[in-house]
Length: 518
Image 1 (cartoon, rainbow, N blue to C red):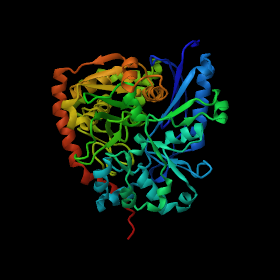
Image 2 (spheres, helix red, strand yellow):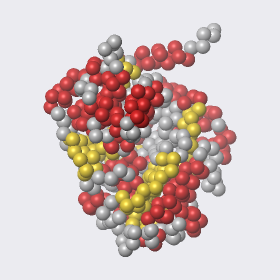
Image 3 (cartoon, rainbow, N blue to C red):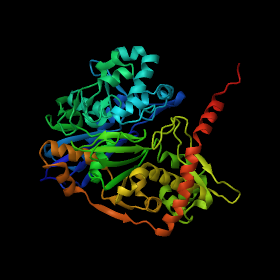
């Protein structure tokens, strides 16, 4: 079906779904295959994944992709791999997992982060690394393991990130790239490990766990005969592991200059914009990450929870909407578009703060006690108001994340599952006052990884050239002036409320943990 042309494969190992996507030279998504991988949750807000199950899902997705397209496997010139960031993926000397992966959304190390905040360690780290610490970061996870699972660390040889585990299974090579390595142990200005920070974290005895760092555009290795046979490709195909998913999405959306920013409306809502130099002189918030381009950095403001706020609402308060969608044979989220479109801006005076993750929040502020809330409820409020308030609350959080640079941004590009909505992007445009663009395609993480791999093997002359050739837009939204003015007033209340809440969140957490025992 797609014979006679070269192809690129992009693999995106997301938190809940693994996807493999086939691209042509113009960046068009020709075929997509995917497989879900469960997140294993437990007490103390743990979130883990079976590493072998993740690899199996990658293998199955690529194999299904190739089987469904009728392409010549020899036409694949490179494989690009991206995946979820942060977390801790431990393997032993033989390359075997020593325990399930601990994910970025895991909350078990909250006490470690709190202690480091009290000791001033987080401030010291920020000055060198430019990234806030949160419970799902690798450094506090390793510290938690040092205290609670020392035997696990004794078995481990390497501490990887998700995409690096996938790349290892494809190539047999152990490494990470500059984008994933940008966290915790990294000197963000010099793009190398900061040995001082390893000592600050009291992890010197585990320095050997940190893998070599390669440039994001470097070939990680070549597809080995075993995995090649398992997925149906010839061995020897170059594999490029990087960048991590949020940076890959920035490339897939064409966000490589300071005027255009992007938001991923997914499990996490990641808000990012490109910098010519790291921003480490600001207050501690979000992260500075090496971009896919060697002379650029990405400023990231990732909310801990994005669309899970909507999932929670549907599960607990949205039975009526699910029933309505079912009786009308509509996709439930398309039906939600119809519902919120009928509710005027401001949601009848109801406001929602979307800090629903049990691990608290990490951007645009860090607080492990932060919790979601509705305010403004009265007898006049109904579930339609509450639903619109959730969409608006997430949109306020997006604006909150871009607040310091909003005047520099000319356009906001959206991707992720939430970008399929026909109404939510308009709310975001009205709240932020910025033009909102929806790019053509759906799998921008996989696309960014594929473009990066294409440059690495000489398929494209540069990332900027690849982006110019492959990025286009499907639709645009422009802010309504009257709605924007109304949202400005609500946004002031949103910020005032969330700045007032920290002592109340902490008191609530203390009350919730009170046992009543002397």
